Length: 324
Image (cartoon, rainbow, N blue to C red; front, side, top):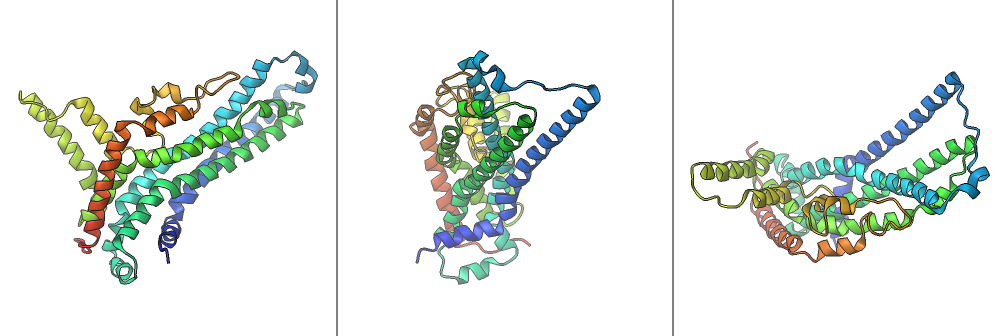
């Protein structure tokens, strides 16, 4: 029997608060703020005597295709933003999830129970890596998509009460294309994050106490040592720019979309949505995603991440104690 799906379910149920409820509460907060803004606008309208007495249907003949496209672009941007905002919290969820993934069960001695089951260390570590690579991001994308649909319903209903027809603007948007492109970024995120996933899992398996300090302070000390040697007139072990990129991959690449700022496949602004009828040149263009997937930068990191995960698996089989 394939035990990996069961292990993935275990990871989800044990960390449902971070994987599911974190994006739920973030997107729900956005919707609440939206509703409060509408209520405030209605109160202001009543007090100031402002009335919205126009209908998009009455002026449709005077609206150009570009106007509709720009309105559709605004909806595309909102869908994009609903997908981006949970990613900020997802970074912290995944960072501390990975740091505790192989340490927490040693700390509370539950590792003895899990090792008594017919489950290999490879399957256990792989389930934790795959949860960070795919399970948590897919849940966040599903939640953000549902929240965007709720946002569209709320905004459409509110504007409809004032005689504004938003359906032509919605027809000019590209919800399925935007969703598909965001879905395509998940395997890119997963591969790009492998060095950080491997690094954090390695220290989670190795540290007898305080894996956070080992995972974070060691790179900081390496930066200091590199700077100190250079200050004394000695040669830098590695260039400052290259050092920053390596540290970024080790500590920050679990942030979804962090590869956008790497320069691979274009500058950061090249990934952003651009207004206009044709948005193919922005908003996560698949051609740019392919450029990232075929870059040496990505695959060097993948090799390093796999090596670190292999080391974490080896340690998992040999270290069950902590200092507690």
